[in-house]
Length: 184
Image 1 (cartoon, helix red, strand yellow):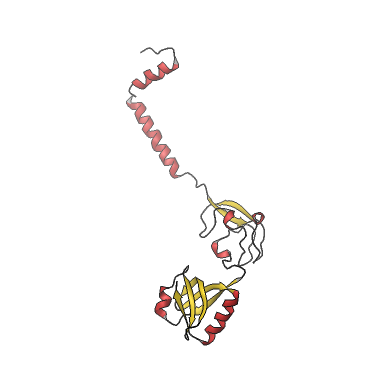
Image 2: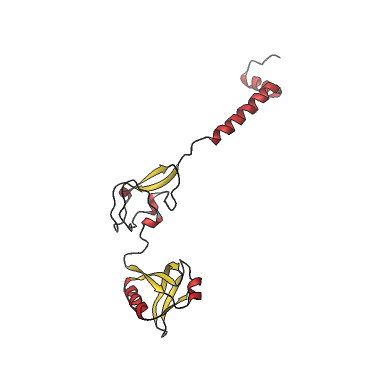
């Protein structure tokens, strides 16, 4: 076989030829080795936001307080970018280099507070879920607060996030009276 003088003609002539069995085996072995090597390929890491310096509790985070790193294994509840954290305060002090998780962030705004309320009706307490909004009612039918956010539930105990002025009233009333919640 003679090859044409131009490069595209040479490629067309080679494409028309059927590869030899040795070449096909060599190609199959190469593809198998390539597939095997990807099994041992190192993990590229998992992005997580960490504190760039020691941070106190309660101070809103700024972009300078955070940096993005790649960790060998994922941290549950961590954040892949710092935009989700800017402006939010920490619940406790944090050391530099420690990954920040959802548990480290205060979820209650400054003018709100969380109050634990023991619900009189166990069946109703089983229906209430975090993220629901409820009204808190006394046994006399007085509405103490409307549209309180449910933060957590544990048996008959329901933790509500509500305005600070209402929170103290609900906490005081729950000491003496059985309270009920109505789902919205």
